Structure formats: C-alpha cells, structure tokens
Image (cartoon, rainbow, N blue to C red):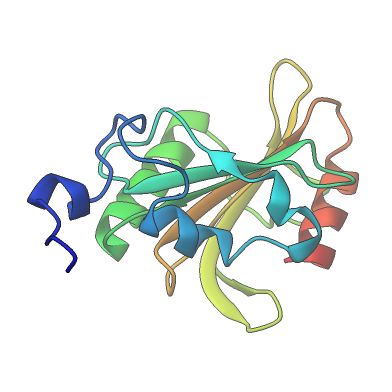
Length: 161
C-alpha cells in the first residue's frame, strides 16, 4: 500500500528549486513544449521570476545557444512579468521581425497560431535575445545567442517554434 504524499511533497516548487528531484510535475509539463531534437538537454532553471512555478533550460543544437521556458500559474502573473520586461528594456514599439530590437504586442505566431507576445533585441554586450509568452500555456520563454546576429536567432525561432 502506498502512503499518501505529504502536503510539501505535492505543493509544487517555490522560488528555491533544489528541493525536489528533476523533473517535477511542472517541469515535465514544460518539457512537452521543447522541440524533440533537444529536449534531452533540459535541466532545471534557476532564479525563477516572482510568482513562477518552474523553469527549464535547454540547449538547442543550432542557431540558439540556450532557451529557457518558465511556467506561470495565471495569465495575469505571466502578463505582469512580460510587461515588466518590456518596461525594463525600454524598447520602442514596433514589429519584432528579427531585424529591429522592438516588442510586438498581441501577435499570433507558430504552427497553432498561438496568441502571445514577443520581443527581440540585441543587448549592450552584443547578445541577441528573443523573449515570448504563450497565453494558452501560461508560459514565458527566451532564447539567446552571444553574438550580434539577431536574424539567425529569429530564423531559429520561426522555424522551430
């Protein structure tokens, strides 16, 4: 007979991720969003944003150096976090097409015409970034490469989403 789990064994991760074996149920769900060709590289993400349930970090085989997926419990927390990212980056409004470093709000993207938002930019250190959210899955994600080649990263994002 199996003993019932204690409340702390099923409560889900807190901002400290070291207390449960990898992957926990939230991380398992996040792994279902990862492309099959690099899902085996998944590992626990650290430093969760406020209110997030879990994060995983993966290493794509080409064009992006890493991608992180973060699970939020509600659309509101997800949107609030994304808005804080946009404000913090102080990007001008426009179209995130891999050529300019600007956010695009209320866009649809991907094979399933997902409702979400995305932004792309090159940081002051020359690192190229794409950040996006998926309202349906309550997921925030970002990918980067450490050179100033945003069009290559954007191509990875549009081909592999």
